[in-house]
Image (cartoon, rainbow, N blue to C red):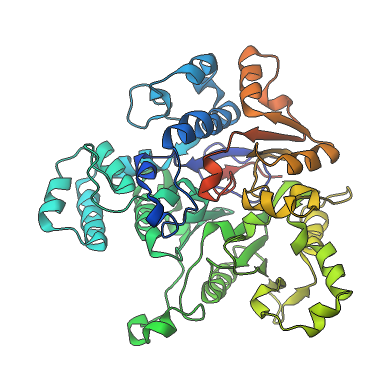
Length: 483
């Protein structure tokens, strides 16, 4: 396996190459402001208990990332961190904050660019315009230092708990703000207005932070439909005219092959624009578009499948080959009325071909990726959500059994509540271990991150799962080793 050079800050050519740098955002004080009447408007299914989400769940995620990506930051401190009530190690701006160049916090990057007076003025003005703040509020915001202003922009809340504007509870899902495609960064365009501010913050970070300086020419933005103000409102809202794309619908599965989901959150117009831009610039040679049912259950393609190894994928069985075979024997499927948007459809486009190729089902596509694009020489295996058994398959897919983050090939992070999916991993020959146990083993030296093979690491998830996103959603890989 060849390694990407250490002097490269951005580079991703697969879903499973060893993770070297990742962008995250820890649950902030804005999450504690989500109320029942606004939860679904803010894309949450429920309100969460912020302290539990941080201390008992997300902190485990951060510690694991550090053990794999920057162990010197955490080695010798694990026991203390598990018992530390103050949690300064996990708080950006705190004197004890871990501040790793490999586990990169969105809030830290935002604070970094806010030290520049020009950027600070532009961004404050833009946010105040979006949020319809008064001129005095804009002047008041200028009294805060960069670190606190970053927290305000993200949480919508002043240090005294006064709410200036809505929080950004979905910012913990950093995958959705962009995707690294080889050495390029494709910026997302959110489907809902509640995510407009986080998209603006991401733009400013990617174009202005020194971390991304050498990659500014490689940052890609999808064009809007020209002259949208000339279109009737109902037409502009249509997926055929509106450009919306979120990172959970984009997967870099091999250096020349990209998957794009056409979903509830990613419009057909955006898919078309992405294909045009990526082919025109010669960034990839092949793009497969996967239309999935436009249901809250699925949201993005990474909620129905993710990759574990070259030859192993986890997915929802009802959208796979087995379901396709069953439909061919089902009289009701052919004769009863059905909505076309409920069907899964896969079309593969190549830069040097005029006509796309239709692929029958999801497993055929994933098998082709494993064997042809990645050159795998082992039989392809599919691990099904909830062991493929109803109702467990649907229950556990809802709590992100298919939304796993590969730390490296074969080592993935998932939620501890998905028991049947965990059993499916065991039956596929994987070790299943819990994060708390593993962290103590790393600290004692009885195990090392490099020693793990074919392992599902389960992280506590009672509160995180209420947010409707797993660890694939909660990560934006910036750098992976090449396979």
